View 1 (cartoon, rainbow, N blue to C red):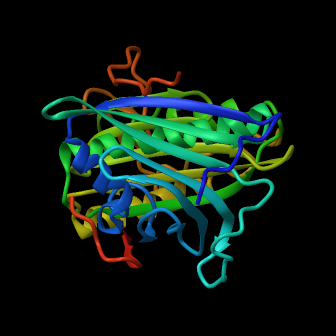
View 2 (cartoon, rainbow, N blue to C red):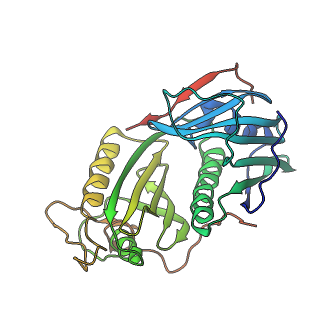
Length: 320
C-alpha cells in the first residue's frame, strides 16, 4: 500500500529520543504485541508487513492503522483507518479516511547499544490545540518506550488508570494542576519520586518512582470543552505488589473524585479530609496531595524538533 499524499493545510510534528537499546529491540517494541502492551497500549494486535494492520486499544476504544511501510529494524509507517474504534467494530482494511493522519518511526543505530528513534506524525488537524494534545501524548509515550527498553525490557507491566471529567472553566486549569501537584500537606507520604521527566504545567507531569517500585507515573489534564477538563492519573508498574496497586487505585480514585469544582469558580481550594486522604512524599519533605514539583528538573526531555511474530497475534496488558 503506497503512502498517501500529505494533505494541504494540515500540521505535522517531529520528536526524537536516544535510547540505550539495539535497533532490533526498538523494532520489537513497536511491532510485537507482546512488547507493545508493556509500554504503549493496554491491548494490541498486528498483521505484519505492508498492507497489514496495527490495532492499539486502551480499554474499549482505540485506533486502527494500515501499515504502509515496513522495513524491519529501520522504518515503520502507518496510516489511520479509524480513530476511537470499538474493539468489536469491523473496520474496512484498505479504506483510508479523508481525515486520517499517519505516523512514521525511523530507527538509526548510533552505537552498538544505542539507537536514535525519530517520530514523525503527519496530517494532523491544523488547530494548535489538536497538535498540542498529540504532541504531549507522544512525548509521554516516547518516555515510556525509553523507560521500558532501558530498564525493564522483557518484563510484563501492571497498570492503574483513573480518569474523570471535572468542572473547570477555561483558563482555570492551573488550579487543577495546583491541587494535584503543589498543595502543601503534613499527612504521611505514600509515593516516593525518583526523577521528574516531564513538567508541562498545567497539562502534563510524568516521573519515575521508587515507590511503588519500578514505576512510571503520569498526570494528564486535557480540555473537553469550555466547562470541563478530563483528568487522568496513570501508573505503570513493572515490579508491583498487589497491596501497593490496590492502595494506588483507591488513592487515585479518591483524589480525582475530590477535584470536582476545584476550578469551576465555586471553590478556590481543594477541600481535604485528613482522615481519608493521604499525602504523597518525595522522601525528603512532606508534600501533597501528589507531588511537590522540584525546583530543578533532572529528567532528560524528549527532543521535539526481535523476533517477528506470526500474523494476527494479539496481546493484552494487565489493568489492575
